[in-house]
Length: 247
Image (cartoon, rainbow, N blue to C red; front, side, top):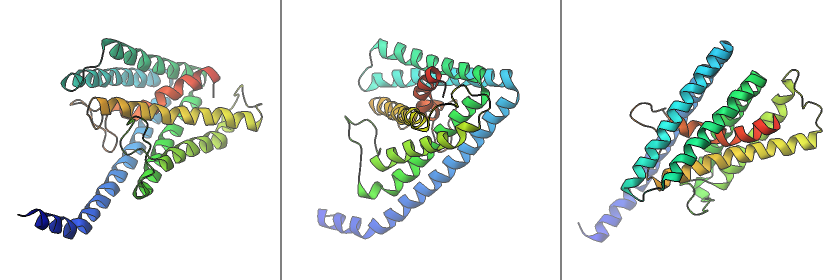
């Protein structure tokens, strides 16, 4: 087939390709939403059993996230090997983040559940708005941090997380920071939302360097999300800020 004939065939198939892509995005969104509901239900069930349930949840997350990070590090040897300190730093970063989450749960379980809910909401809104505005190609191109990351999606993720905290956080009983002025509360919530999105971008950068679409392994793959590390990437960085400011 001549080059002109191939070009003509691609032009003729373009509408169908576009339809297939829209169907794929729609199906991915459905899978992502159902998986998010299932994960929040599991988290709620763990909170029902209080200390034992939360401990089991954090132990599972710690094991799977560290295993997946080791997988990313090992995969990089086929492309551009990461230094050993990258593996050690990642393991310490994941462990420290989950340690902060455990302390937040001991401080007040609802704070941890609210943090998880806000991060899931932020990630979902960033995904929806990002795909809506993708045809406009407002891509974030900071040293190829993450393929397909868009500014509208980033802003939607930050905004939804801030709104979630501003609306639901005052409902936490006996919270030590309920006396904060609204402006200071907004600033802290904005920083938390920013950390959530930055954590997601950093993990995307690591995956791109390992040439992997997600961090999932042969042990576990979450439909619409990937691996455990894909699900908690924003939560890990946000947990450090939430722990030190008890948000």
